[in-house]
Length: 319
Image (cartoon, rainbow, N blue to C red):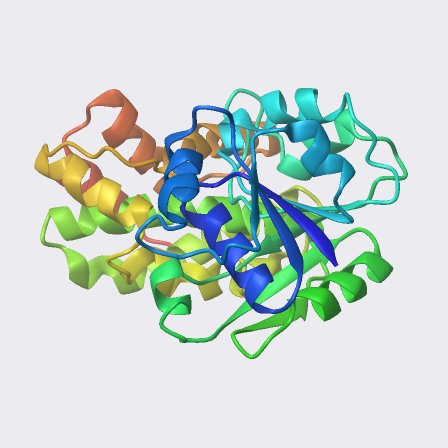
């Protein structure tokens, strides 16, 4: 199968590595001048994965799309609309597109499949690939379970068959909306977990996990999805990799933020927090954890006070 991976950052380059390892013909696209692409051109490695020389490296978007049967996209969620404006100039006829990002568009609160559908023809199917796993674990041979979801049952079946291996076991998703919201919002919970670590309040993570899942489940239900999706691999199932792992960008961001230390990596959860609050307002759902993260990160509220206010809210039934 001819597969083009668009985006050569940490996750995109892993996807290219993985898809090549399981026997596909892979092209990895990056913007001209991208430091990630230039590094791969120079040494075929970024320090996390080493690509075989048979993986084609290119900065020609048109050719990389034209040659592909499947497009796998892994870019920043906030730059996805701009990418789709470029992609829409080329034919997507006969191709499946798989979105491998976990985020929402901050200004609008839109899900990424919604953005895709604004620019792609109706006949171009789109799916998401979400769930737990870090590059560092996968490349050590530690397996994990992930989810493929789409409006089309046939697309899900095809992609699960094409992408499955002994390293990643895929499940069919049954709630595209819920899995997108769940996958995106777990990054906000990851920032909250990092804040707890930075304040030496790690013991509160159990409460954070339980209440965080309920919070997101309520939103998913209000939006018309299945609230049980919050308890699946896209959200709760991804907590270990997001709430505890030293490799989690969002957890690390939250930890360093409250310690007043700089953090130079992308923390997708920051933008997602803004999107979540828009959705909470639109669907009249209280999102106390999202509000607390926003208060700390974007409005300068004292972290200790914010966490105390969150966990000492009015007494109520758990469920």
